[in-house]
Amino acid sequence: MRWTLGTLTLILTLFGAIPIGIITIGTVVVTPAVAEQVRLDPCSAYDNITTLSATTTGTASFGLPKWGSPRYQSLRSPAQAIPARIKTLYLSAAARFRVPWQLLAGIGMAETRHGRNNHTSSAGAQGLMQFMPGTFAAYGVDGDGDGRRDIYSDADSIYSAANYLVHTGVRTGQAGVIRALWAYNRSVTYRNDVLYYAWSYAGKGGVVVEAGDPADCLPVDDTLPGFDDTCPASRSAAEHGLHATALHGLRCIKQAFPAITSMGGRRAASSPTCRFSDHCTGLAVDFMIPGWNTRAGNSYGWRVAHWVQAHAKALRVKYIIFDAKKWVPSVSRAWRPYRHPYGNTNPTLAHRNHVHVSFYNH
Image (tube, rainbow, N blue to C red; front, top):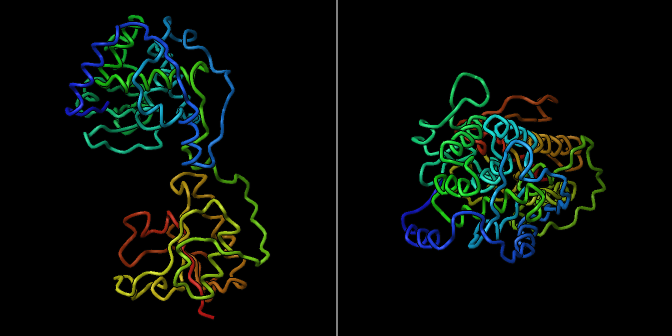
């Protein structure tokens, strides 16, 4: 639901050139977009199953128009798999408002990738379906039955999007779909992206990739990797300036947990945290946890922490901090609450997004 005044003239020109109704299907090349997605996220995988219901069946009595040209986002980013909880909300909202669930999913993908990129936009749009507060005030509904209309609630956002589409004519046939999407976001490329995504989720468009959800790339079992102490170089810039024990620890932990791609090592001596941090002497490493703010990511972080804990003697570990907890074996074998000297006001200070490991210098 975002557009800029600087592109309005071009958008209006393009919109006027495309007939209202079913948009002509052009030659669609998705391979480059998929290849780019896989390049950006090696954990991407093709999902070629086409068992999703056709758009013309189910809760809606009309079919969706096909996408047209130009497109923008969908050329660069294929439709991504829908988290089960969000898929349930699309289906239930579609049943209540009698709209195709794939259309709601197309909007959710275009706006926030089904909540994976759920941030307030530069224009002020909020929530999974990116409502402007004024629009939400007028068309927002209580989707989860808690008696409130919350722009940040996924259920309320999705149900409100369905309600808004109905009020802007989506149930008046294919021309109504075009008008409703124009009301949602006055952009021709946006409309075509949403329709392309909708048909992808119906199994009639492009591929759907398993991407964007950090949990897709993380092991789901609770077993800990082995430890053979070979520990090859990681090729990470974080190795620079580390003490020998910390360097060895970084390489061993990275070898055991290859999903970790970002690490922080030695800091400049001028850092204000040097008076209480081992980073400034090259004796500490931060291991950034992918998807730390998801259940799977948090579980993965604890697997890393517990693995380091299990091999603390061999790795010369002084202490570990993760998820606002600290383990200091010289003091206690128990994990204790941790509070950063500057407070736990964000995930970095509270060490929720990374596992900190400090090492002895010999």
